Length: 153
Image: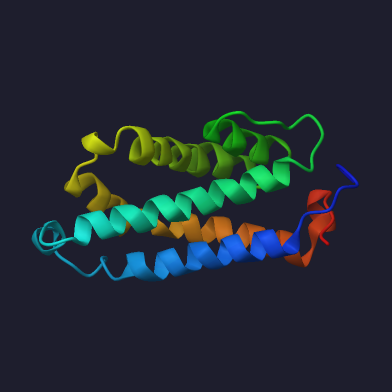
């Protein structure tokens, strides 16, 4: 066991639910053309749901790491790094996908004025499955936390 303090199942399940709700909303934009996406409030709405999904992803990561001694992360990219290093997630997924999500989360929050419609459209077309894959890893932990050296209450 990495630590005797169990994960709070309710926290993880509620955040996974939020991610799934956001993904459901974001899927609605995948069938739009870029021109359709640029019209109306599509960009703003999708930006909102993507940011919420990322926040929930990193809330989950932070919650898990808070149960692992020595895995204290102070940045979102560190959350991604430690989840891989500690074997909570496959290291390649954490390094290649989750670190990029952390960077884009920071861009959405701190450099929102630089985010362009075309880049967000591309992410919606190409990268939503990375968020779904994260959810599947967390679902596996909830089913069998001992494999990751964790406990769930």
